[in-house]
Length: 430
Ligand SMILES: C[S@@+](CC[C@H](N)C(=O)[O-])C[C@H]1O[C@@H](n2cnc3c(N)ncnc32)[C@H](O)[C@@H]1O
Image 1 (cartoon, rainbow, N blue to C red):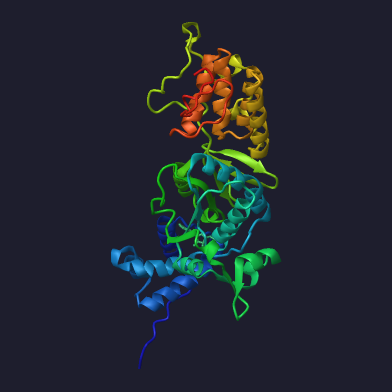
Image 2 (cartoon, helix red, strand yellow):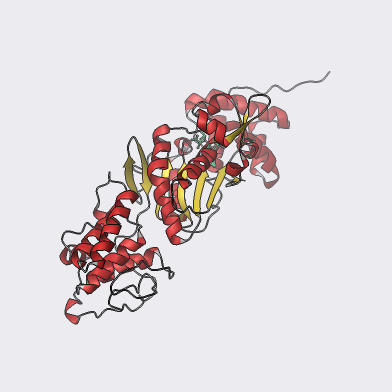
């Protein structure tokens, strides 16, 4: 007679503590008592499937290098894949109207691809929603950047579903008819598959946010979307993860989290930006970026009497009292690229008509509206240099160099601009 070992679907306190400790350590996942019965059921099934003698033997097995496959089975079973297309409509609107246009314009200005990380992407609805928004925004811009969306998740079930890109039911509830027609093809069974144009920009990978290094270089990413993942993380785990997000984001990049997730008491490294009913966290420029190497010599004469050491705030205030400092903007203001474009055009016109003080004021306002607009700092710096405010010019041009260290086509500044420039060297007096 075959004896079938029935593993108890109830965990003792010690067993529960051991299992919960393992999952917190391996994946950051914290289980409170309300999920104890569910966890007990899952692990009982896994113990039965592997033939392990008890929980201790099972944990020993999955802790060993050879236990990787079973470890993945357990992680697949305990993660919560809940998601759908265009989840959190206020956030989607904020991405479509504010964040993506700003980031895409900036990527074009820097001659780089737009890089987005959907971290904890579940079955793919989030990264594909982002790809659809990017495509829709691209159609409204004069020039759009190359786009790369990297979608990662801990669960192989989630990663496989993302690669399959086939959806039905509740998942599609927030997809309107236009988007259904444009971004999906309908299958015979009524399910819908994401079109290749959208699938092709999404690079799907298995990745553990807690134990793996981010799949990016420092400063490479423009936007991290990590929603409804860290709600199950301990604060320390979250702090470490957010530190890694900060590292891979470039200056001016954004971190978007779920509406129940906050960086309050986690880190002060980001600026909270409200966007209507949504919010995002921005990685800011340093207040006055210091050049990594000696700054390129500016084609302006620095008067010795101006070489007085002052704080960055004093320099901005003293040199140009009416110019708003980008880093002093209220927390609830958001960059507005349209306003910035308008102000920058007015600044260039003022410069062309030799109204240099006005040009500098308008360019500073453009920079305040869109702090990563390189040309705003170039125009401001050039205008300040023209009227002899060399120290103010240096501050503005250093910001331009920080944002765009490589030489790039120079904005047309008449009547006294040089015919070619790096951002540091643009001056109407050359
Ligand atoms: C509730 S879903 C959120 C999906 C999507 N971000 C959204 O908001 O619709 C949470 C996802 O986070 C993933 N996850 C949990 N812990 C993770 C970890 N340590 N590393 C990577 N992904 C993880 C889960 O596998 C799951 O797919």
